[in-house]
Image (cartoon, rainbow over all chains, first blue to last red; front, top):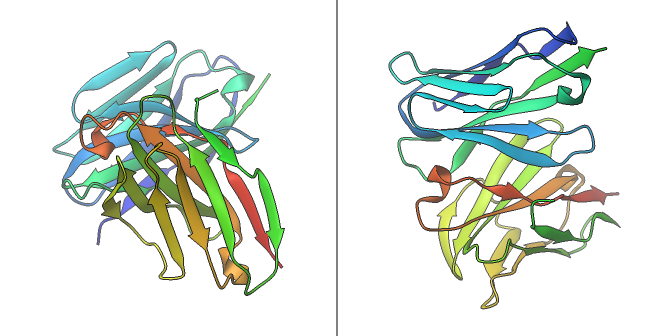
Length: 109
Length: 116
């Protein structure tokens, strides 16, 4: 069964801390996406990865194809980073995204 | 603002009814995707259209149908509504130059459907 698992489900941290959210998947993929869902419900695409590492501002996404694992890192976290972060994958070119259950991140000032 | 618009923002209706959700993609985007987000099942892919043609299908119920029109806007029709259809319905769009899952998708604000 094609599955996407995220950990942790919930994460609370203090402003300034380094944050890591993990995503593991069961079989080979052609693409992995990281999404951010704001408290109001809106969804923003953060990264699309098929290999390696990408960086945008304080956000870094990495993927290890052999280990079937991706991480999303946030450096110098800020309360405005509080959101649900969702990992989504395309299993072997199925051309449809399968979503993880999301990680709820809360950054306290 | 992603450039993707969805109407209506909120919809309250009764079981057995039919509703139509509308999505306008970003200017120039040829692909449109529909997703359902419910409390118990999270985000699920429903269907993708590319330039008017169905390209990929997910867990879309037979009571649901969609289409993409020549002006590239899309509509998702939900019929014989059940309580369990209450959810957030998102539309997203992408350029369409590559496989949809290999492109950044831009999400609309969603339509919140409540079936009573």
